[in-house]
Length: 193
Image 1 (cartoon, one colour):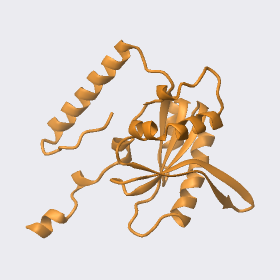
Image 2 (cartoon, helix red, strand yellow; image 1 turned 180 degrees about the horizontal axis):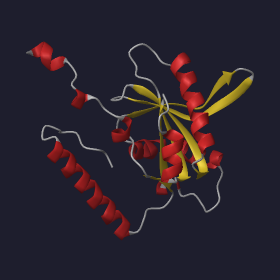
Image 3 (cartoon, helix red, strand yellow; image 1 turned 90 degrees about the vertical axis):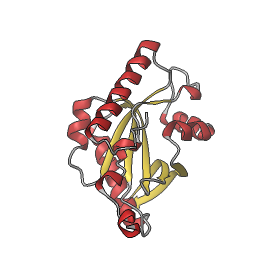
Image 4 (cartoon, one colour; image 1 turned 45 degrees about the vertical axis):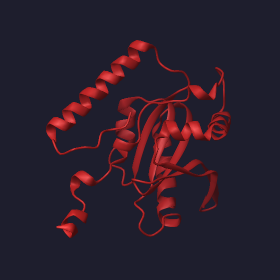
């Protein structure tokens, strides 16, 4: 019985979509109307503890501006984290603009490199998270769907939304949790929001 209980079931497997929320709220950065990607990154690092709380409790910081060489070109990964429950590296790419298909391709390159050179035994394949100011759902669907690597796109906000938007989001999350529990009464995990 103990051996059987130690074996993972499909319900035990954590999915990146369940552990990485969308959108993120970075109002704690106090950024002005105009800022650059390096300003955003520097502010996140300066407020790392608060940023980690916004990401979720299982993220651990690995580094920033991690350099990698592919062919004759050098690239820099904005932020690198490890997620304890997913047991994988999480590469974060910061974008000031709307998500584009080129962002997905760039992240795919980073993930292939990380899988080949940075993964250690026992880890799951790395996950990419593109944090962008805007995300068109159709572009995200066609740019990210079907990739062999797991790439997610999430929006970030530098100010909290108005109260009606927050209330609607809370109600939507409660409904999703109730629907999930109704479909799987044994499910005890809930999507973090």
